Amino acid sequence: MWAAAAGGCDAPAGDGATGRIQPAYNKETGRLERITYDRNGDGKLDAWLYMDGTRVALAELDENYDGKVDRWEYYGDQPANASGRDDRGLPLPRSLIVRAEQSTRDDGRVTRWETYEKGQLAGVQEDTTGNGRVDKWERYENGALRELQLDTKGTGHPDRRIVYPDDGGAGRLEVDRNGDGQFTPVTPQQ
Image (cartoon, rainbow, N blue to C red):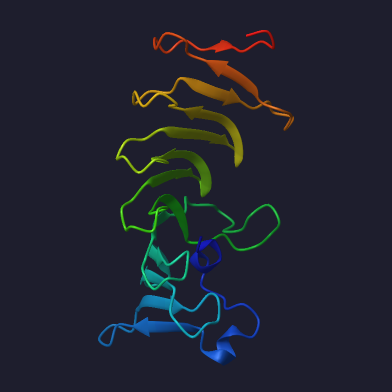
């Protein structure tokens, strides 16, 4: 994720000298339009950040470094804050990620969809089998996984779910035995 870049694209120590981060500006307006980056230092670009001045609009990433974009991140404006700083006193980024799409099967087809709230992962839907149908759902609260649902029968609806407690302990497995959307906990004798 380009979260660090969204705050103004500060180069990691030493990267500016090697040319791994390259900004591109509009010749007429002088506004920043794009930043490219060689994240793994192999001499090939693997990240393209599209800008509207200092605001991030879109990031395209080559996550497996095969020369093809396989992740797209979409950004929106940061909600206004009177101080412009976070709880630690650090400057807030001007843009926050709101959603992302990813090809997880190296075929260029999007199979994972992520949603974000206030820059934190809130939900994921994924086609883990590559058949064009979502079969895995994840729900997050404050960055922590709270619920995982799975379609193990290929019906297009979840029939298993794991609910995770606030304390980070082991999740509770539940099943929908008859496809009516009602989940019941699995007990050891079942």
